[in-house]
Length: 166
Image (cartoon, rainbow, N blue to C red; front, side):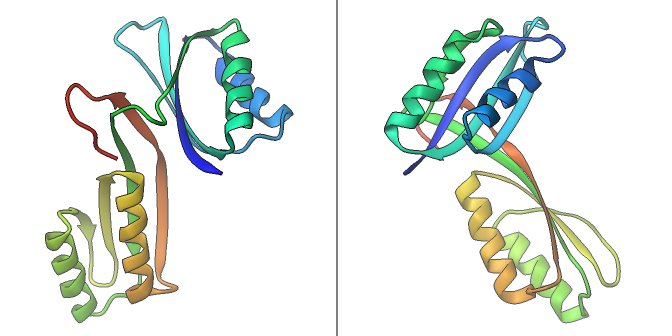
């Protein structure tokens, strides 16, 4: 089993997202994340899908997606040099003054902005790779266990021009 990414260019029409998700559901494939947005051409949307699968299943998924009428192009990002980011919000509840100082230090060291806080709650915004966001969550869970609220968006990705970042 390997982590994989697919980029789909699809027709920007009502029901396309449901049909793509339905294809995954009907075959019992699980998506780790799905992000959809309109492209520079308002008639086309880009879907970035991450999943974990073996090679055989992944090839089946790509073939089935390619056969879908609404899919214009399927690009396997798994082994390509890409730039990828995922948005993550982490809210830490029940903070003491010492906790807040520590969170400000963590945000400075990891270059993660604190976008809101009050006397007992701090909200961090991480726009990093999925792996780096995982690392941030692990760190915060170790120090602030049971006091975290985590909201993750799906990853967005684009082929690199000259370098790879994951």
